[in-house]
Each structure stands twice: as structure tokens, then as C-alpha cells.
Length: 519
Ligand code: DGJ
Image (cartoon, rainbow, N blue to C red; front, side, top):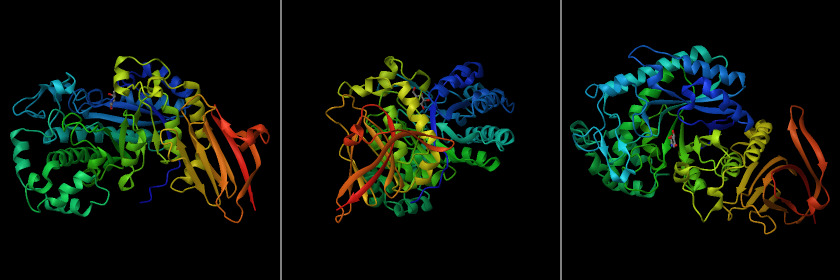
């Protein structure tokens, strides 16, 4: 499925949770983002701060953030921390938290509003119930007020390019809620239209989900219809419906792209990760129940970055990575996300600490693995800034080639996928050249015309070849370094000597190359 065209790539960073609650604190953070050559920041806006008392709204913080972004000529993705933040209700206003009758908590254990489970890493758990009608209404009202305000303040300037609705939704501690109401709904029949849709939508479904859907009975309860995945589908359906009500209320007053982000399923037992959240295996459910959501986004801290990006490309979903680790895969993954996945956005979390040694909680979060030294080494900030600056300077060329094979990339994390084909020519990349010490190899190739290419690469060796059997030899007619400015490509040194003999580099480079093929 062809994705919507974009003319902007969010070369972004997400701030730590608390920074954007203080515009004064943010001053420094904007500077750091500028140093890193970012063009967008992902900034939390919390329900508790915009509606401290029911019906009394205060948008002074998002207003100040808008002004700061404009002064820096940057864009914003606001993150609506409403009923959910990391599957809990940390950012709900006090008046919501206090009234557990009007705004019921999710009972993952019958009768319990809060649990302390060992298998949640000792973390106490409480969340608002997705079956709370008053909660949904109040959250949707606050979000709509926020969007109404945003429309007034930003419709012309369009500083805000997207809004994320809630944060890492789902239910933990059990696969679904167990209040009397939740049990009653679970024991009832699955809405028929939804059951039919699931049966018609198995093309890209995760294997185990598909098997259950195909084996299920029509017109029956959740368990009978969806078997082993019934509780997860049940949670996803109801949480997505809640989120959709909130998103749709906002869209009705100001229609800009909306996203959800996801705490990934690391193949753990249901309820360890937030069950019912927008994991890729539940995308079919979310697409049905939350049509107001435009982009489903993975928060990627697991080592298999590319595997997750692959999963999130299903059903025509564009890639936007709102959170990822700041270890030294961060830079190459940024280039690969743009060059291979044609991503709409890429955003390391807690970018303001990029380059600093990891503390214990970051090491835990990033899954520091001794077998992969890149996981425990912080990203070099100068190089990250270089990647951002270079990609920014190429923005129109990149986005014009999105969704075509005129923009491709390879990365050392996928050494077996090292060949790129462009019409008559191809490039084979050595992603682990023996003469290069570093291992964070990446290479992006953008086809300018039939025989001319821009190469953005690091720690990699490239061999051009002909794809034309009658003209199997290839020469390099021109190799030059350079940069893009407002006037276009400005060439630097001509590199037709030693550099052209072996296209190899141990530092990030941007080259232009013109090839010739002959018999
Ligand atoms: C994912 C969440 O979405 C972020 O807000 C943050 O809590 C990180 N995890 C962990 O630091």
C-alpha cells in the first residue's frame, strides 16, 4: 500500500518526561537540540497541568513551548499524557485520581485498584479503566480543548506537525481488566462487524493471531471467537476505542495527524508488557477501533531495531520512531530509518543526555549487552549532529524519493542485506571491512539520475557494479565530496585518485559519484 506523500522528515528528539513542564528548564534543552541539528522536538503536555481543576484550563505551558520552538525555527510533536502514561495514570489530574467511583481504576485483580506484583519488576501498578465512561468523556473534553486552543495559536504557522494521543497504553499485571463490568463484557458476544473484519483482514496478521481468528466461531463470546488471543484482542479493542474517542474529539476541532506509541511486547507473558497496547500484532484491531489514529509508532529499546521497524511497516503504516536509545546505534539507525524505511520521523528519547555515560536505569532500559559493544557506548554527538545536518540539507531530494527505489540504505545490523539495485547500476556494501575498526556501518544511496548518485556513508566499503550483461565493466567518471546549500550541491575536493580506487571511509562522508559502464 502506497503511503501518503510527505515533504518533511522529523529529525527529532524526545525530551525526558518532566522537562517540558517548565519552559524555563527547556531553554537549555532547545539549545542542545540545535547543537544536534534536530528540526523537531517531542514534548509532553500533561492533562494534570492543562486542567488542574475540572473545567478550568490553562494552556500557558504549551503556548510558551510554541514560542520557543518558533524562535528556534523548529517543529513540535506534542505528546498528550492523558489517561495513560506508560500504561498507568501518572498524569491524570488530582480531581480524576481522587474520585475512584466516577473515574474507576482498572482492576487487573478483581476488587483491587492497585497491585504490587513481583513480575512487574517490583513496580506498583494502577491505571484508569478503559471502561470508565466518565473518564473517557473527561479526557476527550480536555484533549478537544487543547486542540481547539492549538488551532487558534498554530493553524497558520503549523509549528505542531503531529500530536501523540496518550502514552504507551495497555493493561499490566493481567491480560485484561477483571472488574465485574469487564467480566460481563468479556462474557458477551464480540460485535459482529468487528469479528467479520478480523476474518477478512488476515493477510498481514501475526501467525498465532491469524490461527486463532481463523479457528474461531462467528457470533460468539470473545473466548470462542478469538481463542488464546481473546484477552489481548479484547483489551486492544476497548483501549483503542477509548483512545479513538479522545483523538476524534481533538480532530473534530483541529484536524492534524495523530499517533499512538507503543511499549513493545518482548515475547513476555501477557500483562508483563501493557496488554492491548498498539503492538504490531494488534495493529489490525487498532486500525479498526481507532480510525482517528494516522500513525502507529514503536518505542524501540530492544536490540532488534530493524525487526521492529519491519513489523510496523504492515498495513501501509509509515515508520515514525518516537523513542529509541541513545547508544551508538542511534546515528546509523537514523540514516537507515530514512534511507531504507523512508521514515516520517526518528527521535531518540532523553536526547538531551546523548553522549553521556549511561546510568543504571538507562543501562536497564537499553538492554546493554556485552556481546554488542555498540549498545553500551553512548552515541558520539558530533557525528549525530553531522547526520542530522546532512539529512536536513538533502530533505527535498530524500522526500521526493520516498516510496521509490531511488533511495536505499544498508546497515551493519543487517549484514546479509548489503546490495542495492538502481536501474542499470548496483552497489555492494562491505559492512564490516577488515581495514575499518569501528562497527557502526551504514550507507545510504540516493539516485540523482541514471548514472549519478549521492552516497552518505560511514565505516563501510562500497563496490559499484553494472547490471547490464552487455556492458559489464564499470568506471568511476567522477567522485567528489561536497555539501548541499540553498544553491544546491556545492562540490568540494575531486576524489578521483586513491579514494576512488576503493570507496571506503572510516568517518561519515557525503559523496557524489558518476558511473560509466562499458563492454
Ligand atoms: C517509555 C515512555 O514512553 C517514556 O515516556 C519514558 O518513560 C521511557 N519509556 C523510559 O524512560
